[in-house]
Image (tube, rainbow, N blue to C red; front, side, top):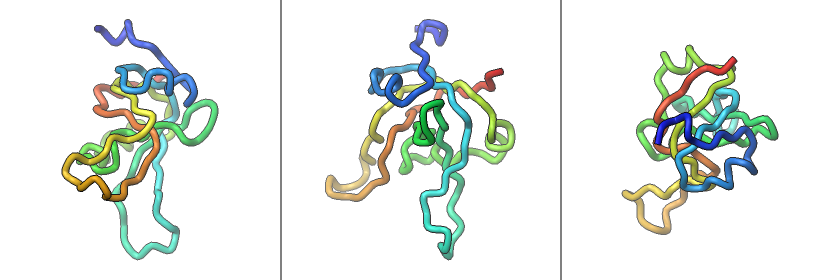
Length: 121
């Protein structure tokens, strides 16, 4: 299926209808820091899309996945811009297959794997 045949969503409720399916998500490429402001360590940037209905759009990859740490080149290119991301949308991040069942994980929706990111006018 080509990317032109995929559903496109711009809100959380619209995206949630495609849980586990390959889609295109349009939102603002935004850096997100889940850690408290008084932290004593520097965490790598985490990226999520800010959707048109709220700030809580999907993350680009689950937190545990190595690709969740986006490159500085990508961040510089897309930060603050409206983008279209193609990939499989999950309304809740998949569990890390290397962790025991009872392991704690950050939640929220994500796109995994991210196939493409393109700027949208």
